[in-house]
Image (cartoon, rainbow over all chains, first blue to last red; front, side):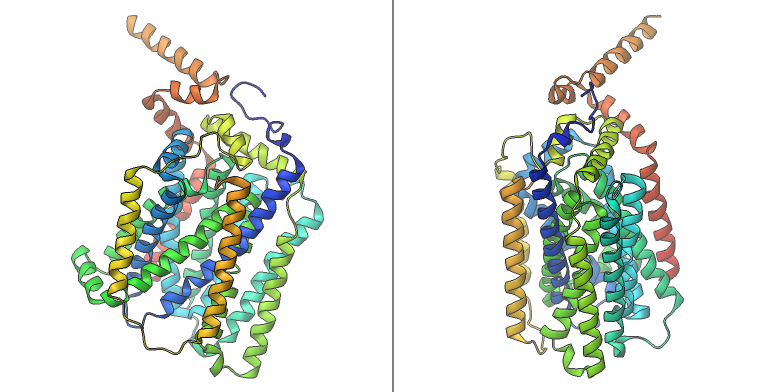
Length: 433
Length: 68
């Protein structure tokens, strides 16, 4: 290895078994991400209509902020985050840009839902997977040296999931507004482009050896900052936001909980992107549409009002999405593709003059630092986040709506099983690196 | 002249710090914060990857203004 650079040769010394283990881990994280990102829709369904959509988004982002600081602190502590940022300080800028992209995209989806309805808007912004694949191939040499089989599996799988999503969109035709406004379509597609582009900073961070738990801590600063600006613009000034928050106090807990559940899904998504790349990680986590449908249709009884044709369409859509998911899951990156990743990592290392050891260890899912211990400061931050959830939870009101409890219990058990499996695998293989 | 000499010495020492990576972690510590942030900003702004999200973000803000 030449001085100051990371050659492709160094990380490829990693055994084939280790590469396979990291790939399997990434796929498992992607599947868990889909389940938890989909489950995040459940608490929002508990909130009755009439709230400002931007306010809903703002409170969810507050929950996301609390989750993004408390979970990484519980896992690694601020000292671990500080050590990572010392090694690659430029990633703070990238994380904040990614957070801003997320907030603008999320607000665009609100307007898309307003104009088109959730069922049409959802698959439109899920085109983010195709944008992500484009950037992954163009900028990070993803899928290069992958062979036609993997190309077909990944691109075909992403296309299958996209068409499955379109079929699912047609299912709840009653929700679709009569005139699909150009404005709504542009907003939904725009959100897809923004979210697809958001994975450029993600990929740069993980090729640089960054720990996903550290990256999300700074990502959320951009996210909350941009969302606060947008909320002030669309809801009114800070005083008006405060008044509206006070008026919906009984629903705050559900929205914060939705944000927290979303964070769990997003953290798994970050690990999926880190260990399988953008081109596989995003389509896998986009299976959240499937889980969202399960929650809405089965747990909240939306199926009951559907005709036989709609149910059949839902089944076809689910089968297509599951087929796409399986195709991508089974097309793990091989050694030649991994070498291309290492070359891309080498370019990042040279440009930003990062410690080569930090980069290569990060790519292997290891850390140069000793396991970090939690300081008193970490416990105070965790206690503040917990207090906010307990305080809003005490004032929460259970909305009056029909819920299919056995299905809710089954979905929660599946979600927790995926959480436990992915978290255990992450700990065992990478110690959350 | 003394100023030029000082700048030259600083540049040499910076280069030495940045190119000597025999002890990776020590190398990071050896860089001064000012030097690091200058290098970092230049590296970020001259990175084509930076301009793609930046342009998309600005476009997204315009789109949001129009769609709302």
